[in-house]
Figure 1 (cartoon, rainbow over the protein chains, first blue to last red):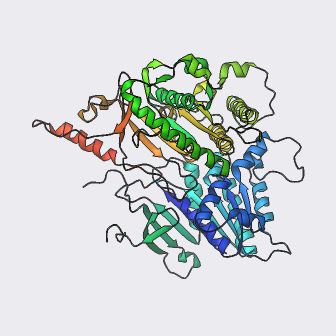
Figure 2 (figure 1 turned 60 degrees about the vertical axis):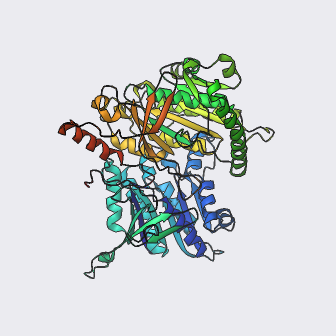
Length: 249
Length: 342
C-alpha cells in the first residue's frame, strides 16, 4: 500500500481531501475517514458536487466516518457510563495517557475486512493531522499513531493512507514541523500545494508539486517532481502546466 | 461559523467590531450570548451602537430590509436542510445590501435590546458559583464557558432538538479577549504556559458546538500579547474566518502619508470555505479602516497619488515597503513570497 502526504503551505489544500475521498469511494474501496476539522455535512455537500453520496456510502458500510468535532462533544458532554467496552476514539483528550491508541484501534477495527465485506483495498484518510497536536497529543504520539496505521493498513491490509498536514514556511510551530518532516521522509507520494510566488491571482489559485518518492526504492533514482498549477471551481479543479492557464492563452 | 478577530494593540477597534456583531444580532432578531471576563456583559450590551435610521439612509435601509428578508428566508432553508450554520460574513466593502448601518456616536435603545433574548456569561460571577463539573482537560474558566454555551444551545433549542419550535432562530455568541490573563490563561504572560493546549482545545470544542447548532460566534484574541506564535497558527487553523486589526496608534505608520486617511489596517488572514470547494474571495486584499464621528468604515486602501516634487528618498522607501506589504494576501487563497522585487 501507498502512503500519500498532502501538504499545503500558505493556502488551503482541502480540495485534495475531497478529491481523494470521492475517488476512492467511486473505486469501490472501503474508506475510513478521520475527519477532524469539518462536520460531516460539509464533506457530504462537496462530495455530492463531485458525484458521490457520503450518506449512501455510510449506509452500505463502505465509508466509516469519524466526525472529530462530534466525537469530542460526545466525549466531554456525554454521560459517564457510555459503552464501557468501547472507548471514544478521542479518548486521549480525557485521559492523562498521551497516546492515540484508542484512535488507532478505531481505525483498525474499521478497516479490517469482515466476512461480508466485498470492498477493494482499504483506505485511511485523515483531515487534518495537525489538529491532534492542537488537542494536546505529543508529536511522538502522532507519529506513533501513523506508524501503527502504516503497518496495519499499508503492509498488512495492502491498503493506502492519505493524510493532510499544513506547513507554512515561516511557521513557528516546531511540533508541527517535526511531524511534517518525519512524514515527508516516509511518504511514497507527496502532493504539495502552495500559493504562487507572485501572490494572489484570480485565475490561478496555486501550484501543486507532485513528488514521487522513487528514491525510497533504493534504485539510485532521484525523486520525480512534477509541477502544475490549478484553479478551483465549484465542481472540480482544473490542472494545467505552469503559465498555461486558460486566462493567459 | 466562527470568526476570530486579532485585537489591535489597545483593543479599541476590535471592541467596536465586537459590538457591531452583537448589534447586528439585535437588529436581525437573533439571540445573543455575550461572554466576558473583564467588562460585565450588561455593560457591553448598553454600549452597542444604534442602528442608523436617518433620512439619508432611509432608502438604503428599505432596500436592505427588503433584500434581507429574502436572505434570511434562504438562510432558514439552508439551515433546515443541512442542520448547519448559515454563513455570517460581515464585509461592508462588498455590497450595501447585507446588514445594517450603525451610528457609533449613539447607543442602542434599551427597548430594542429587550426585543431579543440575551444570555450573558461574566467570568467572575460564574467562577464563584458552585462548579458541579467533572474534570475537563482544560482551563476551568474555558470549561465553564463551554458548558454554559452548551446549556443555552440545548435549552433554547438551537441544536434542533425541539421539533415543536417552528420559528428557527440564530444564536450569536461573542467572547472577548480569549487567551488573556483574565480568563486564567497564562498564554500572554509566559513563554512556557502551564497548559499550552487549553485555548486550542477550547476552540475545537467550541467549533463542534457551533457546527451542531444554528449559531455564529465571534471571538477576540489579544494576538499581539501571545508570545507563542505557534498557538496563533493553530488558532487560525481552527477558525473559519480570521481578521486582524492593526491600529496605527503609537506606531510609525501613524505619520506615514500613505495612511493619513485611515486609523488602521484590516488583515484578512482566512476566509471560510464551507460546503464548497471554493471560497468567496473578493478582489480586494488591502483593507483599511477608519473611525469617523458616526461611522466605522472598512474600505479598500487607496494609495495616495505621488504628487509631491520634494519627496525625500526615505519616505519613498517607506511607501515602497508598505506597498510590498500590501500584496501579502490571505491564507485561504495563495500567499506569495514576501519581498518580491519588481
